Length: 394
Ligand code: FAD
Image 1 (spheres, helix red, strand yellow):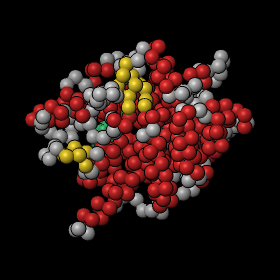
Image 2 (cartoon, protein in one colour; image 1 turned 135 degrees about the horizontal axis):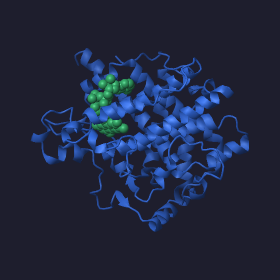
Image 3 (cartoon, protein in one colour; image 1 turned 135 degrees about the vertical axis):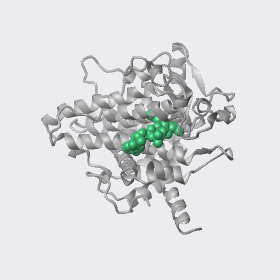
Image 4 (cartoon, protein in one colour; image 1 turned 180 degrees about the vertical axis):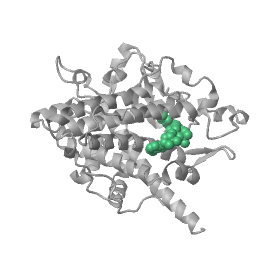
């Protein structure tokens, strides 16, 4: 029903859907275990950051009804099924999954995780900003600390006009100044990344969906087909995103040795990452096809600043959990793009520098985004089985 195993799914990807499914099976255990380690399960973001794209962000969504479009009779449901509750961050557990940090204990938290990247995060004077996201997101004093493993990405009930407006604004960023042929690959890639993110979110919310009649969470095949499965292009864009994130991980493999994690589990965490990157291949994606010459340099700058806008549009999302995963994933893609496109012309020492300077939050976002895609692919494989069972009347 979805796409055939041999469907070529992107220019520049020399792998089939079946090969990606196989790679995914091999790395699955390690990536799940990695994102549950202390280093990778915490994330910091500012849920209160002002939306800079609209004058009055509340104006887009005054009533709760615009957060409701999947279930019609929300008001009749118990309080814990309401979208605000489903989409909120879980801070009810005793170990406080969301914590406000003052600047002092912020530093101690960073020490706790043995992270020395503070000094690396800041750009040196006059240095060209290579980032595809806004580094201030993580340095802001209002940022909260979240345990991602306790706040899974799943159905939240967020939808309607407000969510539609956010997606529309994100797609509208894909509007490059020149429409020459040369911009086409960049434009195509930008669209695929956004659509792949959108489809991946659609897959998660269908896979971890609340059945409001039984009160049970589980996969909803009809919802998956309506959002993703009936659109082969959307499915292939998830595979495209998997290929670019995987290629970026492959690309930093030689430079990982100098990255510092935390003493006690340093080796364990590093070993898991090495196990994962060892299963990856350079033919997953050929980034050299994009931004080949001087003319392309300005398109690349445009691409970078437009993608940065996508990460900032997340500040306008009206559902904390969606916003949090939106930040994680857009920052993860931003990090992949930085690795793919800014590690190219540099010599070995400069490449090592770019990797050394990856901040903790970039690494956390990158690996968690890879896990989101890996989970999506596993769910797609599972939905395919459910679909076949249904068609065969089992
Ligand atoms: P939408 O998904 O809002 O899409 C709008 C239109 O875009 C569709 O009508 C279609 O024409 C087009 N479209 C849809 N998918 C694609 C695609 N893959 N590629 C190209 N075009 C497409 N909801 C949750 O339950 N849990 C979450 O964690 C969650 N996170 C979100 C994070 C962000 C950043 C945003 C903006 C929304 C999030 N949502 C989440 C809401 C969810 O994405 C949908 O917006 C919502 O479920 C309503 O879906 P819809 O079918 O009305 O269309």
